[in-house]
Amino acid sequence: MLKISNAVTIPSDEIEFNFIRAQGAGGQNVNKVSSAVHLRFDIRASSLPEFYKERLLAFSDQRITAEGIIVIKAQSFRTQEKNREDALNRLLGLIQKATAVAKKRKATKPTRSSQEKRMDRKHQRGKTKALRGQVKGW
Image (cartoon, rainbow, N blue to C red; front, side):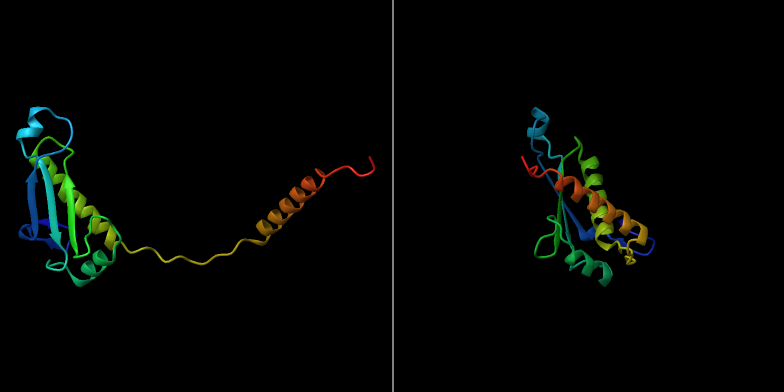
């Protein structure tokens, strides 16, 4: 069972694991041991609350397919257990990131003194550039 918050959990039977051979260097161990993990989680068929489902399906991430299935491949570690744990942590992070509610932005405007300073700098810069022109009378 994967605990997302105090009230929301994902049962283990909704998460599918496939163990495959890892890619890359590693000698004989890579060729004979299936230590990499493919985690698949179907958002639509899950028991998540509707708010979570909507946010996940609307979230733009390459790990979420058009059919609403999250696919995570974990192969950083040498053992299945660690890769499985890594995949679950990445799924948890993805769900938390997708369902995080951004704080409302409060509209502000620059202070009068900052506007005046900005205009003074612009005028000074303009004078400097005007002096770079050709000298008249030569």
